[in-house]
Image (cartoon, rainbow, N blue to C red; front, side, top):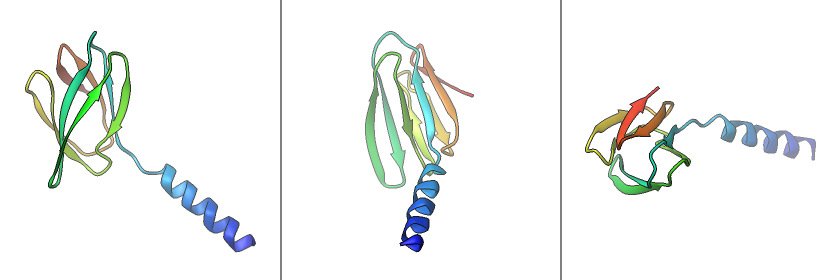
Length: 87
């Protein structure tokens, strides 16, 4: 039983260590980002004032204004006037 608990806690701690880029939409309307990770392409809608986590292992993002940025997966990004500001 002790081994099971240790294994369970190790898994939880490892899962918490996973990072992803954090995107906050500072605009007054929903921002739709096009996210490309490897062969996968998806659209991510982020409501006004909302924050989403994307790209845990890096990706390319196209913003509503047409900006295309590469993310490693540990950045903080703000969407302002449809453009990305990476912090």
